[in-house]
Amino acid sequence: MSDDPGTGAGPNRRRVLIGAGAVTAMIALAEHVLALGPAHAGAAADAPDESFAADHVKKLAEELSAREFVKPRIDLPEPFNALKPEQYRDIRFRPEASVWRGENLGYEVQLLALGWLYETPVEVWIVEGGKARSLKADSASFAIGPSIEKAPDAAPFGFSGFRISGALNRPDALDEFVAFQGASYFKSVGRNQQYGLSARALAVNTARPGGEEFPVFRAFWIEKPKPGAADILIHALLDSESVAGAYRFTIRPGAETVADIEAVLFPRRSLAHVGFAPLTSMYFHGPAQSRFGSDYRPAVHNSEGLAVVNGQGERLWRPLTNPKTLQTSAFIDKNLKGFGLVQRDRAFKSYEDLEARYDRRPTAWVEPQGNWGDGYVELIEIPITEEIHDNIVAYWKPAKPLEPGQSYKYAYRIYWGGEAPEVWSPAWTAETRIGAGRNADTVVFVVDFAGPAARDARELPVADLFISGGASSNLTVQRHPELPGLRVKFELNTAGTELIELRLSLKLAGQQISETWLYRWTRA
Image 1 (cartoon, rainbow, N blue to C red):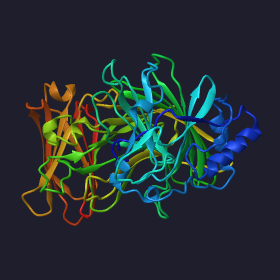
Image 2 (spheres, one colour):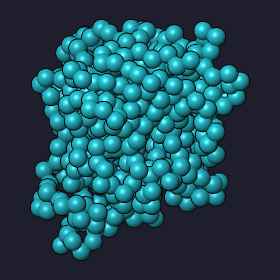
Image 3 (cartoon, rainbow, N blue to C red):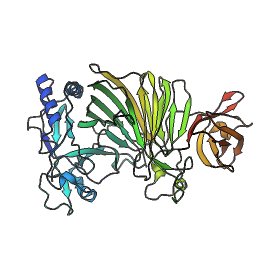
Image 4 (cartoon, rainbow, N blue to C red):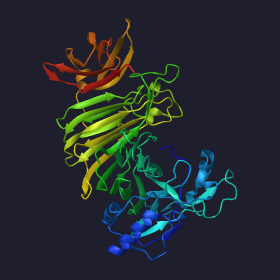
């Protein structure tokens, strides 16, 4: 997902028949959602407002799952069928058209235009007082600049998503805190942060033969909050070749913006490789793995590590890399406690980028609600040569396939903020650095630990190091007064190996006092 494109839409609404629970009404709406007529994203027939119940989206998803997938589309006239980036940026939301503008609810909704990278139209409804009505994309809510000549009043014809503003940074101003745009992507920030990594509703066949499948949100229902409400409620209808689903988001902006997510999935076919709560981020380079020595910036990444708390309560930390070849890693577990893509280093001097401000990118932490059973956290690292590409994916892969003819419920919470909310171990990894050793085929590792156990240790702990290949030497633990904390340093001889897995922790009196640091070294 790109950063905010500066477009949106407002409350010029068109009514739509949702159905008051009647099966025929639901089927009619399902057919409409499947077809999405050619005029615009809000092109449902005019009708009186109808009742909206929380289970309508679930019923629509179940109905869709019994049919073949039809990708949402709109036949657009030129140039809207092939907008250039500068043209897309010239489609601007009219601020005065914001949904709920002037109603002092503490929230406003602005819609995002269809076009450029965002070619899949979405239906958007506002739910108020138990009734639902659709929004319409046209010149009443969008202003179109000179890069698009003679745009008709119906332009831009459809929506690609929306963003919501609330009292995020101060009580007397509304700031954007969440956006949904593109496939099933959404992103959020905590207080005084700017967008970085994204989440998705579902990952299907990621990094597997046959290619990845990208489910889409084809319709949203946003409930109007009461004045002063702490959260906002969004319903979403998911669809793809293999699965349909109903999602419910309860989002609370704040120092940490928190999203509670409930999902029900209806597979169309067996899903052997599906990922729950997928997170997508970017790691270009940094001290843990630097392939681009000509960059003036010490580090360039939205996230620097994967953190996991497994079912046994062990805390894992895996520094991210930008490998030369695609890498997948599986952290097998049962009853996962949580995982996330984390930006730990918050010092500007670590990035030296006044535009991107990587020091302000959020951490996203996923906390399962209920028992997710057997499976594994999968980490995928993809080679990139430019920072504009997301190359990191992490999600929970259940051990058993999801089968058609059944429904699957799961729930989780995502925290978007400065740190993972989990109470961490007494010592955690503050920094990982690698460099060339003095001899051929040797690599020097420097791992700094912070936290009370590292800072206040009266005696030096022992470094417990495991390597799957090669040979290690010169393993030392020393105090790091500048951190303050501890530094572990060792050399790794990689001669004759192509891949080495490393595992490191600190122990005192036989007890582990740190999180477990993991690393994968590859020659390729």
